[in-house]
Image 1: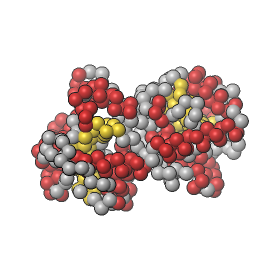
Image 2: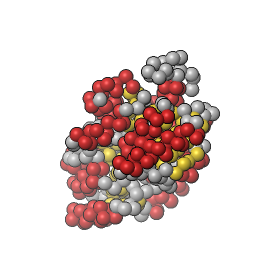
Image 3: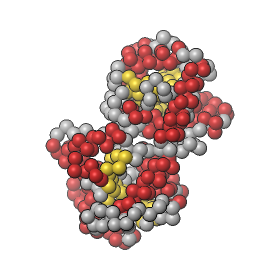
Image 4: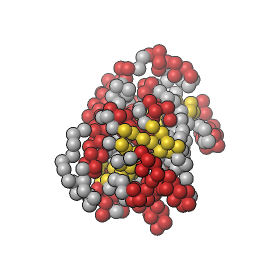
Length: 387
């Protein structure tokens, strides 16, 4: 089996990470994994996982460039004898769909985002993600959204959520020295409560909501740490710092940038916040935090209803409501240590039970085999081969 993954770039993000983890599973199963993208900082990681990377300028939404990319993908499919093409974003999926039709190659899409549809043109642009011979939805929330928008796609949808590596995201695997070194580099004073919001700096990710909540907290020593890349977002980071100064909490915030050691970073948090103002398609950081035995407070929309068990592994609050977020944080910090630890233990057990990396990889490879065993009309010709 030769599978080609098409991505705009491989510079980081949930879609790229899911593709990387699938590449690793393909190679472990003895299959061939190819990746086409405009490149990025994850090129070495994909190579280490066993993928061959082909540079194609897929990071474009220009219609003429999309057509040119379709021709390039079709040529690559023919040259490499690709059995199956898997697209992970909308503009790339348009090129991939055209290439798949031209070469009669089975086509898979993964619907990674809660794509907005403000007008008919945007709806048409998004619709390509429902055009795959199989459509992977990363959550039940996304599956429901696809069904509502594209009822004819229902038989082709498979819900396969991202998973976490229980060996990498394991509190017991993080040495005290490893966590302490990170805390020093981030200038975190020992003994002070830490609220962490891991996300790229973007208005819809809710950093401002957490700042406003921090200013309301009963515990005036709590620190908020915003983990995420600063490159290209300096202007927004400066605006957030100005807001913090106006609220009188400038000394209580940190913007350390991105980190390559998210498991160690999460051990520095007492609690993790997801404050997105728009629904998350999945929200990988929620299950990563849970796997590290950290409770999560999440905005109550999107896939959070699936990934946060309210009152058991964390809490959900109305989106954009800083007062409600502050009240939830106050309730958490008022709990005795044993109660906090019990929530963390429940969170880790839930994450390992419901969102394992092995389950995601096995389900994706089973989907590939199911599709490759179908006749041209999409009906199963033979039972799927074992993974």
